[in-house]
Length: 268
Image (cartoon, rainbow, N blue to C red):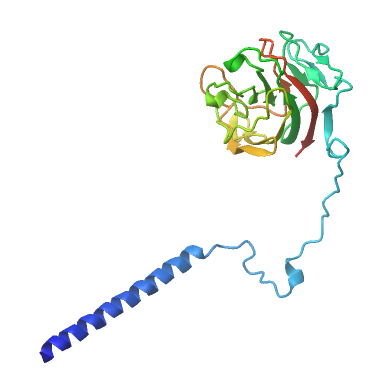
């Protein structure tokens, strides 16, 4: 019986030692994983002021009564089309400025583009589909916003109107399905806020791809998506080296009756 108790005590002692080693090992692993090298190694702050930054002071931006930032380039405010030309022949825009200061796509007149070229930017644009239901699928209130004339954020009336999801409203066309469908009722105004970071090239080689973030009516639908290349209706996207380029709005050619308003951009 005495030997039995001695053996039991020894086993308990060994088990306790093993558990202690496991805990120590676990603690060491966690500690190792949580150590993140700091860019401030060797510059230990000794006062609160050591980690405070006072300049450069960010410039102040104000908003007008339409919510347009003071540092924005206004591309369309309902008064003129001086910032735009037709893509095909650089002629004056044939799309129609309406009484409510919106811009109606003129069917089969062709796409329009900005006269200016843009790189990385914050783009705000508002659009609406007609109250009258015309067409279905990709033929209902179809237009598109082509960033740098290559990367399309889809405009479409998807209310009770299904289509392929990488071509629905809020999609990065044929590349990225939106996280959610955030459209307002048909015939009401939608808003896109698009943050675009342009790709970078070394001659013909891609160094950094383009990225896009899209908020649809204030709802995140594209979250820093890595763009795979320029839009193709047939085939896989691919990159071709380019620099700054215009913003292009699409005439889909099927009586979409889409209207735009309040278009402005901030260069980043």
